[in-house]
Image (cartoon, rainbow, N blue to C red; front, side, top):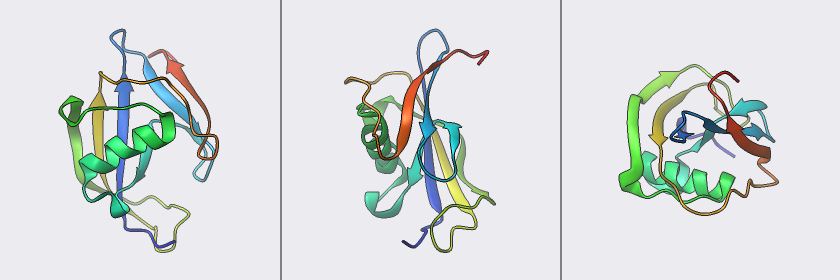
Length: 118
């Protein structure tokens, strides 16, 4: 698969400041917020909404996404896709969502709430 060099991230936070993070099941491994390529999603906002649903099974409404200071910021980071030597990142925050947490078993090794200290 060819890298489009455009990625989104979504930081989901509850009222107590806990973060919903997942254990990545694919390269790059680690604990992270939801993230993915823009690809055929059409826009960074739609990609963010779709990735939350795909990776965690949760739904976020477009009006509940908040842009952070990271909007189309180029980062030299490698992905597993061909040509993936860098990405222009759009990062959003969300405090409201619906649905039941159901992490995707192919893309994640699970997800849970992490306290700010963790």
